[in-house]
Image (cartoon, rainbow over all chains, first blue to last red):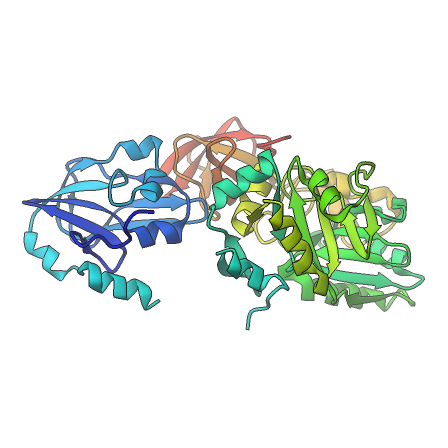
Length: 129
Length: 350
């Protein structure tokens, strides 16, 4: 099992994570989210070039039992989508913070990340449930 | 307050995710996950807690007459220790529940869906007035476990030292106060056990100790869907007839009168309004219950009743009621029209 709350990431209350690298942000769903979903069998990815507003739905992740919306914690333009998920959606379960990343966004407003949770705060949110 | 089966603590100990289902707190999956649980049943063996299923005993000299009037199949052909699939219909032919009818030495036992137990009991009690003496009551001290998969018979034989090799499908064996029934809801061979509630945990633990995969409601749903088996509340409801669901073989018009007979006979003569089919969509998006189905001209053709990812076929599958026929339709999934092929509803046959 991977580390459930890596400290170098920012988190949304909707259980997405963001890894900031300059003006770009990598986005995925958290260990907790994939654990709650169970076996992920399909990830609907947005087209590259799509403009997204912060906390707007940008795709869906389907497990055997359910469909969940994906929300992008930052606004910007999708510059890459993880096409490996088309054939191997279970990467979201196996490696949620690594090979299971979902999109890469060129941030329109890097200050968006200030509204996100630290690893410690996100851990509190999950454990309060 | 949700009800709990005798295995509640055993599920927690195994790390199950518990969910509310039909008034019960039941395991939806274990740490292995739905796909691993599903594959264990297809390739080897798995065990399910089905203690939520309703058990209703029908007793008295007129018990058979009551069942013949209330259910569509012909229970008079059952010998002792045999069971059959049957359907309870209302006067319009709509489905009150789909059930298994067991003939025991001194009585009959009805196994019904958890969500319908109270309704089915009340229905039998209402009809029983005309068949004195015949009574319907909950078989309260018993519950069910299900062991399913190609290795299920060997496993149960060895754990209970029970002679199962000659047990035929839809037959039961009484063994140490346990009813062992060669039935299931997975499309695999298997044994369903009706056991005293106080014995259930001991049997469950003995099976788990053999390394058998515990399976939750999630895998139960993917397994039954691959096998094309209907689930009440999805493929069946009070506005849907067993003929539409594809169970004409369990409706015996020549056995004498039964509730719903006239309406079903008329529907058979006039033609079905809708028919349950299997759909295999293109791509990986999964059709879900209530998604609309349209024909190739864009006209309404029906609705999805169940959809999932098939672990065996490794692609989405769905059941739908369609009003017309044709080779292909489109399914509306999140605003997109996804082309789908119409197929027989048994996606998987062992």
